[in-house]
Length: 57
Image 1 (cartoon, helix red, strand yellow):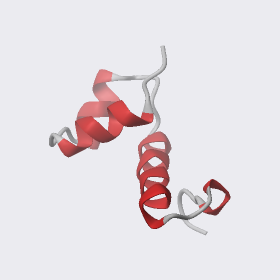
Image 2 (cartoon, rainbow, N blue to C red):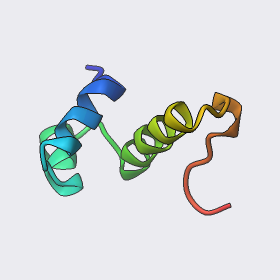
Image 3 (tube, rainbow, N blue to C red):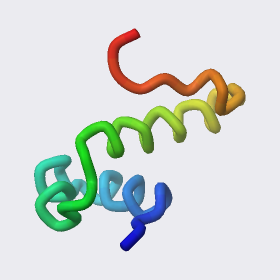
Image 4 (spheres, rainbow, N blue to C red):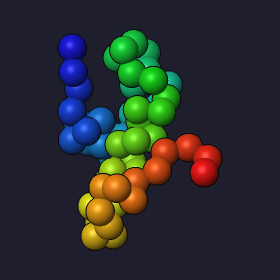
């Protein structure tokens, strides 16, 4: 099963916690949620997707 970036961001915007997301979607990893927020940041900032980094650099 796949969950879209849009869905994850929508759930986060509605106040769903990372823990709730991970519980409701056991196939997700914490890094997946971070990747979604990094992607959203890149889109808003006008960065290229190549600039997206997840975790500590």
